Length: 109
Length: 112
Image 1 (cartoon, each protein chain N blue to C red):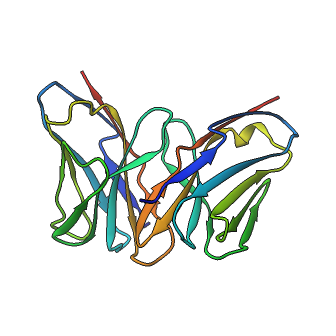
Image 2: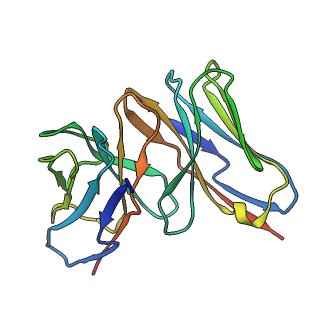
C-alpha cells in the first residue's frame, strides 16, 4: 500500500528565514505533486515533478524529486507572510493519487 | 471557462438523513474523484471513477455511495450509515494518464 509521509506537520517560521518540507513515499513513482491549501479553500496546484532529479521553482518556493530515495522536498526561501498555508505533497500511482497529511506553515513577522 | 463545480458550498444534515453533494466538470476529463478532509488532516479517497457507469471504492467508502451516469457528473451521497460525516469534501477530475488533478472548491458538510 502506498504511504506518503510529510514532515514537519506544523512549521512556524519568521519572515526572511529559509526552511524545507520533506515528503517521503513508500512505492516507486515518478509523479509527485505539491499543492497549497488556504483555510477553508480548495487545493491549488504548485508543482508537478515527473522525473528523477526534477527541480521546479516558482517565486520563493522550489521543489525537487529524488525517485531513488522516494523523497521530494519543498524549499522555502526568505519566507513572507503570504506563504502561510497548508502544503500537501501527493504521489500518483496508476491514476490513484495519495496525499500526505499536510504541513501547516505559519510565517510570522 | 472550463472547470469543476461543487455544490452546495455548505450543507447541513440531520441525524439519519441522506444528503447528496454535487460535482460537475466541463473539462472533458475521464476520471473523477471524491476526497474527504477532516480538520488538520490530509485527504482520504472515498470513491473514484475512470469511466461512465463504473466506479471504485477508495479507502473510506463505507457510508457513501456514488453514481457516474454522465461523464460530466459524479454526485456523492452521504448515507445515514456514515456515522461521522462532518468534514470538508473535495471533488477532483483528471485526464487518465495525465498529470495532476483539478479540484473543485469543496463542500463543507455539518451534522446538526
